[in-house]
Image 1 (cartoon, one colour):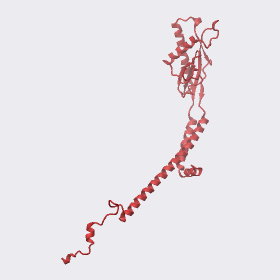
Image 2 (image 1 turned 180 degrees about the vertical axis):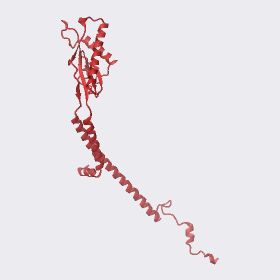
Image 3 (image 1 turned 90 degrees about the vertical axis):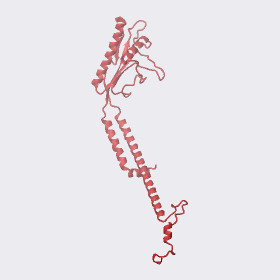
Length: 262
């Protein structure tokens, strides 16, 4: 469609365009006023006691600590958790979870396999307020600590061989996120403008089709009336016109005697 044709459509269907722009403005205002979300994330590290053979408490080959962290993860989640993302950098907000929590081991694997190379748990929470998020984080960290001590007490682990727990960062920092409002608003305006133009073009085409159907119907009815009044070719099986009725032909005969001559 040429630019001039599009301008003509917009002029004829200005009401459709106006409604579309009004709806776009309403959506834009709602987007600007939409509240953000509070969230927090921290990593709970499982540190095994240092020894001469393994002085590094965060040794990547420490399979026993990794397995222990996996046990705690399963216990917190009430079973093996569903892996939503493989990257440790993906947050709950990135996944679209604005009111919830998660406790997961960092998984650096790909699509076909998991890879747990670090004895730690990533603890995250999101919610409508900073207080809600802080309470959820404190509760999750408390559960992890209590479960670790319970397992070690049940196994009668000595104090020197027990796992140390630490957080990175060391304190929970609740953050506020409201997304990129400017980008969202730009996308809404662009889509609203395009949808308004498309709607006006469709409305114009529907109106043109209805006018054409109406004119064809009226022409057909008018032509049928003219031919019927003229005794046209619509009558008779062979479309040659119906013959004169017998009664009419008898009345038109000139030889019939008048009633008074009988």
